[in-house]
Image (cartoon, rainbow, N blue to C red; front, side):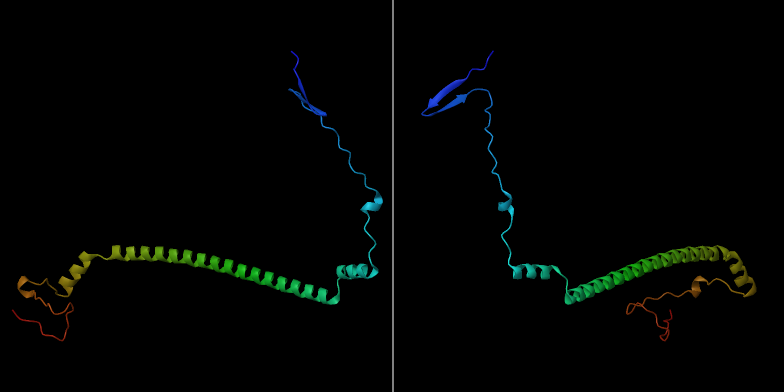
Length: 160
């Protein structure tokens, strides 16, 4: 089945309507001659100023050297501080490990001391060798003191 085209005329031009794509007409590119791309002649003074601007003179080199030395000093100082911070952090880690080891050792020694104390032996020595006895109920005195929470030794103990 062939595509059907409608042709309409409007004055001097005609338009084709249908399902085909119109072909674009190639546009000729402007041709440049080598004379058009060339710059106009530059004044001798302008050319000398441009060349002078591109050259590095002594003050520019001195300023650039000073800036490079300052930057190098800052970088070396930064690296020195960074390494000292790292060394301090490592030192803190070592001290924390040592502290943890000492705490563990201290806890083990405290447990050893607590288990080595024989309360039966202490009772025997106190009662048999030193003649100590438990206090009787009539020897224990209780009193209330509401004035202060502390008991002072220079006050008299009340008698019941």
